[in-house]
Image (cartoon, rainbow, N blue to C red):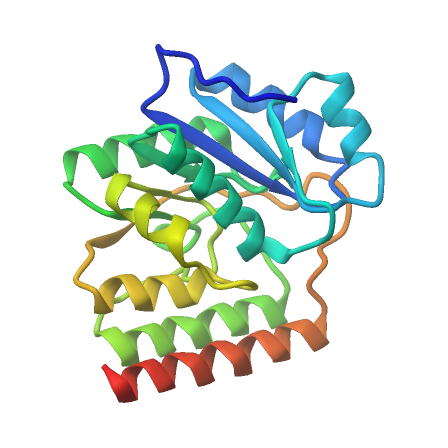
Length: 237
């Protein structure tokens, strides 16, 4: 459906990338509306389940990809839209319900008061009830070490998909964004460009429905790809 931003909340857009999220999307959007006044858009990344039907039946502002482009393609579509419509800030909120919309206020306050380009919501800056799989925790720690090695910046939760960026970062991401598994790559890229990146503590939950599309094969591919590209960029920076 056509997406027309409201004048009142034009400064902030919440981008919800969704691929086969029929089990969690409705709840995520209901919580978002309950806890924030901000505009949002769902990026339906070529879903093959009932996600498109739910979006239509519930009247969610949305953009749809004819084919699956991955999380990077979804987020770039969202950033292009935010750029075109003049939003000052854009927030990534995954459709699976792991992120708590009530924590969005913390991201907004941090990016505005800290004069920052990106603020990441971290599960690990303070004790929380989040318990991921052992493999996921190992992967997160690996990327924490990689980002520290490449940038000197300590990011405890580099794979977090709960983040806010300002206007100049929106403009950058609308022009160029990694196609798949982009979270770690963009942190390294931003820091190398002199952008200001910071974490704040947030609470996260287990996925509220459906299944993750990331398996062991994709995880290994992700780790090798991000490491290779990051090292190449470091060599030529």
